[in-house]
Length: 228
Image (cartoon, rainbow, N blue to C red):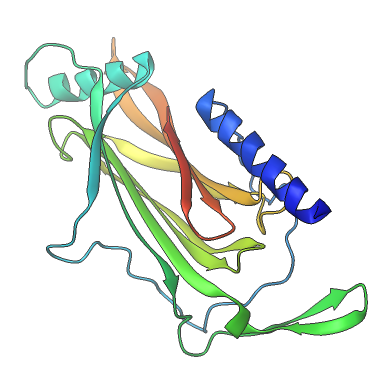
């Protein structure tokens, strides 16, 4: 009962953080070490590309002022004109409760009762693909955040996180995660990317920063999304 109460409180805290737009800024290393979890097979390379004809969720998002300026600067750099528009397209797609790939590696875990084995059969695989791009098309600028991992309804852990940039002078400057393993008080982990679009102002290059954050809960569900 106590564990269930704490988990419910954790989910409420996460929901409150998302509702008020609070972003937990990830670091290069996990901010909270999670339990041991199955590892991907050797040479594992997931394919995050949404299959042809699959339904991809799409929504229009409002950009912060700096990101809006970057988009319009990119339009001018390509010789296009038009009214300023502080909107972008966010597309998302993912799987959950998928079988683990053949060759998934179980790990030995040190527990309160001694060394035990983390069985791959206790986990399932999930993946997520998020893309934010200019209202005028990906050729202007686009950022894609992809991640995958395992979950077992008590913990969620990452296998991969990638950032892909495209468009005018756009690059990824960081990708990573926080709260690997989930756990109290969030029972979820956060993935993110920071990116830069270089623009020329008075013959000098300036980096306009932007990025996105994605939460995945310990059931492998997409629990929240923010962009900046």
